Image 1 (tube, helix red, strand yellow):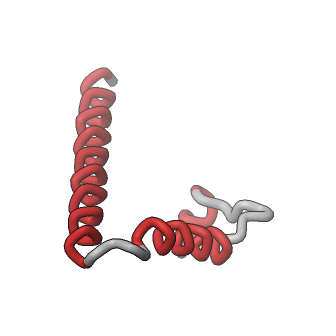
Image 2: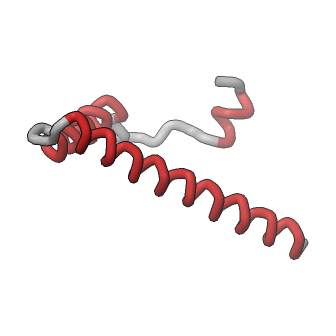
Length: 69
């Protein structure tokens, strides 16, 4: 990270990124442990579609905000 990054995104006191990662992994494991490979692929596809829909929504919102200024 550069100094600009540290200034823009300072560390959050008390935030434990490793704990957060492990909690997310445990949640995903519990959600998928009894799924077939096909079900897991379908879950990934749906999550990917939702992610890209969010990205597109943010792009549209950003372009609208840019046009307003």
